[in-house]
Length: 352
Image (cartoon, rainbow, N blue to C red; front, side, top):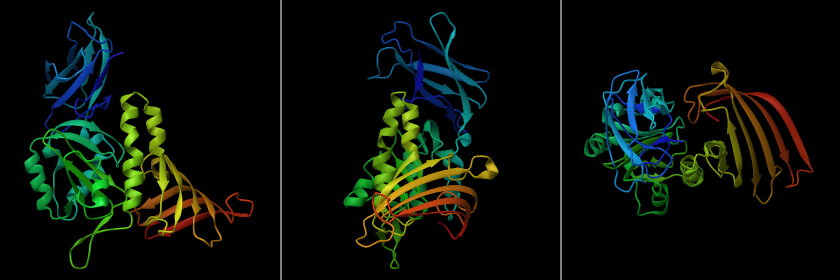
């Protein structure tokens, strides 16, 4: 069966997202290996002109298509040898991606006033997940770099130190990290750039103005970088369910949320983005199990299930307030023979 995918990221494309430029660049594979006849790709239900060419290094029978003049609401259609539709995907505006609005809001905050859409030539890949964000071909890598550096709220990834090197290990091109939490992370290269939001920022301004590495560096590197690496490979292999399962899992290390206690474990999060609650009909459920390695503790193991009912303020990292239903089990020993349980309604102000 044929499929559309992006040449730069190799990600499968089931929805073609476009910026205000109306451009797209996409690969199509018929799935039959070498094919003497080039697959015809056209725009349906809307405007758009399609030009095709071969891409050096692409598998036999895979062709690249450049499209201009696209509008949301149309479709991209690949025809088989009989002229019948073999694959069809919708065309949507980039602002319909759930990660785009929070990213755009961050770019408009703190005096940055950066219009991300104006820097996008065409979208390579777009994810609803904030930690993945969007990848795109920039109109000008130099102009995007200037906009980022002129804002004076980003720090260039320093690959000379351990944490900077590890944090930049999966960055394509030059990385720029917003000194804030949550933190925009921008990677810039002439052929492909990307931007996403890190939940655990670890760079801060010291009183003297220097950039310092915060204690959330370990949580960020393990959870948001190393643990996420297999997701792209799984999607490329059409194992989207496994990728979604992995996305729901989060390693737990000492971090700002748990007070930096010597605690290790795993957290499972269900229910979409952190912005979801009862008002949108999809409350967020999380389950976390951790082991405390403190020499003397009354809670060696802890299991916590939390249903976020309503929250207000910045829901991406630390909401101003949260109303949640929580079930808590604490165990004095690792086998949980001596344990206590509680269930209650909690109102937390000032983050959690």
